[in-house]
Length: 318
Image (cartoon, rainbow, N blue to C red; front, side, top):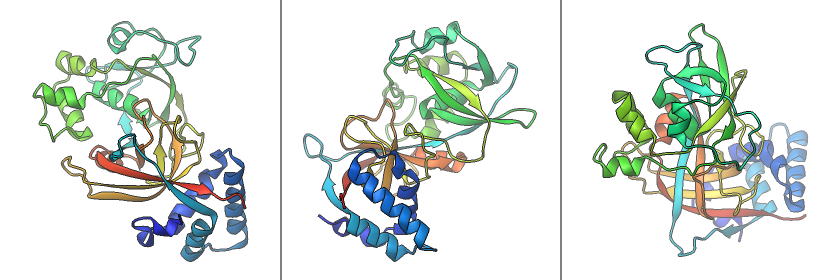
């Protein structure tokens, strides 16, 4: 099946998609993907500029399309994430009272450490910075973030380790407990509630998610963070996927509409590149769309919970 048969293909910004693919295709490992990656590099080098029609022709001649399917044939789920920007402090104070912790010495991937509540009660390792509790909680969900300190200095907090506990979303239990309405559990609504109930009440809710992330601090280069594939994430063109069903560098068409959270955009459709993964991203039709960096991206990302269809664009070997 040709990419031209995809729903909404004629409305796609093929040049934007081409640039995202060309920037991220080195993450792909199979031979056919390398052939198409080399072809994209050649087009970039010999065509100045690359035009939208050239980009469209690249996809239509270099790829075939295969739908991804759930076990029951029903739609999967699209959510979204972003790179948050938060205030931080070098020293603890009344509001900035939660430590950003470095990875424990000798940590090994897959190692099981105590749950969130025990780590917070007795921090086992070096403190890198201090944040508001709700900000740190959301930065741990996102896996990275950007910090601005009181002296104006900036840093990127990058994932360094985790406690091996299973991620548990707090939106559903908050709704079940009547803390938020059933259709009012967007990221912004959850964060606002935690901020308004800062202290033991919010800590009890955050403790429902036992997973804990440790960080390292790097300079802020002003760009977007790298995903698990080691490549900077292009806003709105990168997704986190389940690596048991997808490979880094895969080119994917997503089509998602019908989101019902307040403030949700009607639909998301287009070409994206699989460049990341996440503990809550499981299944063959499940994706987390990287929205970008900062507050505006975060506000939109928090309202994404849309039924999802996905198609894999399979590269041709020649």
